[in-house]
Amino acid sequence: MIPYGRQDVNEEDIQSVVEVLRSDWLTQGPAVERFEQDVAHYCGAKYSVAVSSATAALHIACLAAGLKPGGTLWTSPNTFVASANCGLYCGANPDFVDIDPRTYNLSADTLEEKLASAEKQGGLPQIVIPVHFAGQSCEMERIAALGKRYGFTVIEDASHAIGGRYRDTRVGSCAFSAMTVFSFHPVKIITTGEGGMVLTNRQDLYEKLVRLRSHGITRDPRFMEGEPDGPWYYQQIELGFNYRITDIQAGLGSSQMRRLDEFVARRHSLAERYDTLLREQALTLPWQHPDAYSAFHLYVIRLHLDAIGKTHRQVFEGLRQEGIGVNLHYIPVHTQPYYRRLGFKPGDFPQAEQYYREAISLPLYPSLSDSEQDRVVQALKRVLS
Image (tube, rainbow, N blue to C red; front, side, top):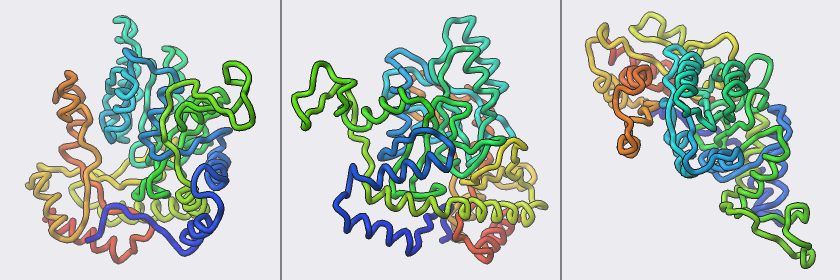
């Protein structure tokens, strides 16, 4: 079985982890700070906070931005549930903005229309989370301008997109947002096993994120009530969480960062190869916005079902039977049973729903060989014929 995604761990990565295991620190040590600095420096952001997962990163980013119970968060329906769940964790109300039918990202046009309507009804969001689906940046300049106009905070969910660029900036620079979130799950661009990170250029957000990561505790006298009792002293000044990442994971992350550009270049090479090999098939291939350089976390095709004469499920299961571990990203969040109980229903976001009825993610990862990719293509052609 050729999976749709796979980590790429080499001997240098293993040695980096071994060095941490032989050191004095396994958690809350220097490897975490080094990893944070590596990512922040690469992206061009001032601050970064490593945490246990991108879900944890989204949660504390929302809290740091001041999302309160009864507030509103908007995001894309074409994403993993965490992009919306983070609002629920804060007691807020999630809502969605339908996708652009070319990029499958949150549509800036639809966002503008929805904001104009929401302003009239007194229901503007406090936070908007654009999701850089498959590694391609959303139209961040437009979204940032709408944020200034309508007064919402922008948090980029860039779980797919480390190593990507938007115009002249790297994704993660926070040039068009208050914060950016990355994921380091094994199928993502680089991995720490499990893990995530929040980047920001604002010191106030950074200091709050650091506290929220570790129980809401501070050892900094500037934030304490009264004077510290001694050098051992700490105070819990707000309700935080244990969202820390280990030095073991961070050691792996720093090692992986040294190959990030190599990983993304190989993903582009494979994507271009798919484009060439599949151009004559009854498929819509990934479209790339001229302002974005994708990290190509995913290579998603859309089936022309009328021309193929087979159902979506028949094609998907046919590929699995051929030993091709395809996947589907994503089931629209608003159609999940939990969200239906919140009042959402099929038909609410038709572009995302139409995309879901046609989409399949093909295998794409740096260690995928040309011969394995040829096997994927031949299997797909057999199933479509």
